[in-house]
Image (cartoon, rainbow, N blue to C red):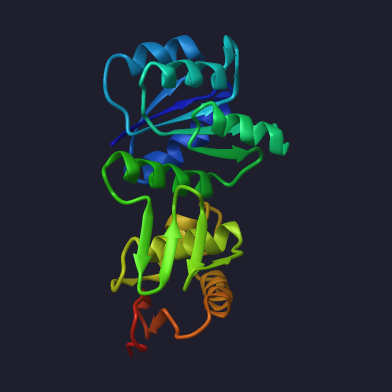
Length: 223
């Protein structure tokens, strides 16, 4: 799938493009709204990552105008503006997600993949047993009860929920939910999974597959 990164900071644009490319996405880069607009009119995109403040204007105004004309490509806004009012304005203008700088490029890539799944027809809400993972709103409920998860806990749970009943290795989880500086030999995944299990409660849904990794399933441990 093709995604576009619209960012005038060359170093940041490069980092974002590299991370998305590593996630298997075809990345088109633009430094301003005029270039982005020309590219968007030439072919389909699964998602667009917009820096809000660009040399030729506020991307929020551009997206709002395109939405009014029926444009429905998922949009992730990147911005240094962290006030609640700014985030609300971003969603009101037609943004689908909003990430405040500085941010983890791994988390950004996870959010872009979520938006791409929506464009690809995959459900925005993943359900398994009594677990509900709302990828668009980044909300998790167990038996109808809203849970409070950290960004990393959500990223790991979402990654498992996309692959229910499949065994997922610790290495795959690190590659998709952490940035490239993470040590694949560390126990960071185990620590996050332990916290997730505590927050998700009983009966247990995340199971250890000895020597292989983890599985999101409705039944007991696999050994």
